[in-house]
Image 1 (cartoon, rainbow, N blue to C red):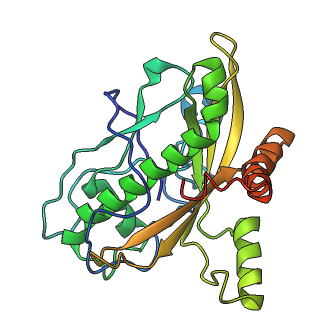
Image 2 (tube, helix red, strand yellow):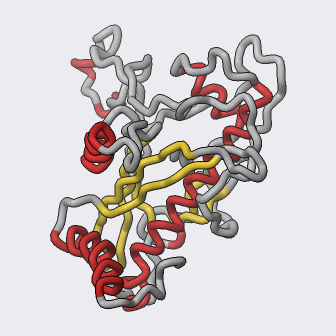
Amino acid sequence: MGWFWADTAAAPSAGTSAAKCPIDHTPKPSGCPIDHTPKPASGCPIDHTSISKSDASASQCPVDHEVLNPMNNMPHLSSEKAPGQKITLSTERTISSIPRGESEDQGLWEYPSPQQMLNAMLRKGKGDGIPEDAVESMVDVHNFLNEGAWVQILDWESEHTSETKVEPRLKKFTGRPHDLSPRAQMYMWLGKIFPETFNTVPPFDRHDWTVLRSLGREKGWKEVRYVIDYYGAPDDEDTGMPAFMLDTRPALDSFDSAFARMKRWGVPVWKRAMGDFSDRDS
């Protein structure tokens, strides 16, 4: 989950709820098909244009790493058809509703095209067993989940947004599919003790998003890290479509974030203790 590109600015698309996926993409992959772990490749991250002539005699760079975009830890992905590819996939990319960077002239984050998605999976060795004609649906689900994550972040940020009248923006993100968040670890531990109450299946993906929270117009931004755990949920009983659950919250790395999480949990508990059940269905 969570790939973005930002080559083009365009009008935002409508926000999407993350409760249920609208795409029936059978066969369904068991987890996120994308390995977000940066791996060594053939490129070099060093700009050799500034190297002196005395150093230019080296036959090759001793560093063998591919240049990664620091905003998403991803390399450049080709839109060319892969060797042996049988189906022609779209190279058009969808513009997200998520503002990119600190200023409006940086536009919106852009999702990968189906062709880029396939090339990425093949490059990472994740393409085996995934039908080419399922890739477009996978991209739709990928985009849907990230739009849902942003909707949840906007909800967390709504109190600050109402004060400053400035919408938050997404500075960068990092995929961490192999790192269980502390909350996910806690849920799995509790699941061993209370299997009827807590889920014992780990999230299939995790992301850390660095969100820019406005300090007021022309007053700059505060960086707030959010953690997003992506869980599979039981298929919808009526349609049989796959469903997902996103656990989105500010990371516990500042007092403000810790207080926000305590307030989000504590206020409803206090209200119910006082006999107010008005938000039970909200």
